[in-house]
Length: 204
Length: 204
DNA sequence: CATTACCAAGCAAGCGCTAGGTTTGTAAAG
DNA sequence: CTTTACAAACCTAGCGCTTGCTTGGTAATG
Image 1 (cartoon, helix red, strand yellow):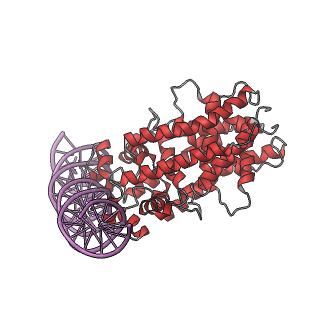
Image 2: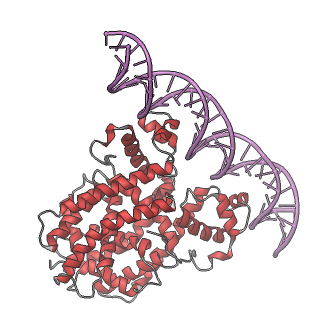
C-alpha cells in the first residue's frame, strides 16, 4: 500500500519547459505523495523553486492546478489508448493492447497523475467533476466498444455483462498503482497476460 | 465516481450505544463523504451533537479517530471472511463465498469504513500504517490459502500467479465501492458470479 | 466523591490567496 | 548599437480566516 518507489512526474513530453508545466509536474508528484489537502501552496512553490505567491500568476486557485493535472492526464491517455490498437484486428489482440496501454498509463510515466485522478477526485468542485467526467466517458467508450465486439463474436459467456466486466477490470488495473513495482520480477507484458485471464479465462 | 447513495455508517453491532462508537460511526461517514482532511473536528462534533473540544475526551488526536475506524473495520471483516467459508469444501465454493463476503463488506454496512481504509491511508502516521498493514496481511492470508488450494487442484492455469490474481481481484472488488448501487438491477449474488468469471473463466 | 461526559472560550499555527513592486527577456524604434 | 517599451515571471509582506487542540470548569451517575 506504499507509493511506488520511482515514477516520473512527467505528464507529457516537453512539459517541463514552461513554468506552468513545471508546476503541473511538481503538483502531480506532491498530490500523489502527500494528497491534495496536505500539499500546501508553499510546498509546491518550494518544489519548483519559487515563492508561494508566484503560483497565482499561473493559476487562479489551488483547485485549478488539480483540475489541470487531471485534464492533461486524461487527454494524454485517451490518445494513447486509441493509438495502441493500430493494426490490431481480433478482439483478443485489441484487448491485450488496451490492457498494456492502460497498465503503462498507471505504472509508467503518468502513474502519479493517474493516482491523483483517482484519489483526489472529491477535492474538485462540482463543475470540474462534471467536465472531467465527460472526458472520462470518452475513454471508457473505447473499452466498451472492444468488449462488445468480443461478446458479439461469442468470445464471452452469454450472461456476462460487458459494462460490469469493464468496471471490474478497470478496478483491477487501477489497483496496480498501489502494489506493482517496475523493478520487480514481473514485467508489464506478463502482468498484462495475467490480467487478460480475467477476461477470457484459461481457454483463450 | 460519485459516492454511493446509501450506506449505513455502522461499523459493528451495538457500536452506536457508546459515545466513542457514535463518534467512530460518524467519522466513518464524514471521512468517506468529505475526506479526512476536509472533515474538521467541528464537523464531526456537530454530527454527533457535541462541542468540538469534547471529542478530545474520547480520542487524543484526530488521526487516532481515523486509525480506530480502520482498525475496527479490518477486525470485523476478517472475522466475517473467516466465517463465510463455514461448510464450504471445494475451492470454487470457498472462493464464491469469499467474493460474496468481501463484496458485502465493500458495498454493505461497512462500505463507508472500507472506503476510508482505502482512500485515507496516507493520512495515517507511519507507525499506524505499519500496525494496520499487519492486520491487513492476516486478511489477505485467508484469500491466498484458498487460491493456492485451487491451483494445487489444477483449477487454475499453471502459469497463473496467485498473488497477482488476488491483487487484481482485490482491486476489482474494491473498485465496486465507486460504482455499484445496491438499488440497481444487479444484486450482490449476480455481481459475485460476474467476479468469479475473473478467476475461473467461462469453463468453470 | 470519584468517574465519565461534556461545555465555553480561546490560543498558536498554518492555510489559501492578494497587493504592489521588481526583475528579466524580447523586440521594435531611433 | 543603443534606447525605449512592455509583458511575463517572480518577490515581499501580510491579511483574514480556519484549523487541531488545550484549559478550566460543570453536571450527572453510582
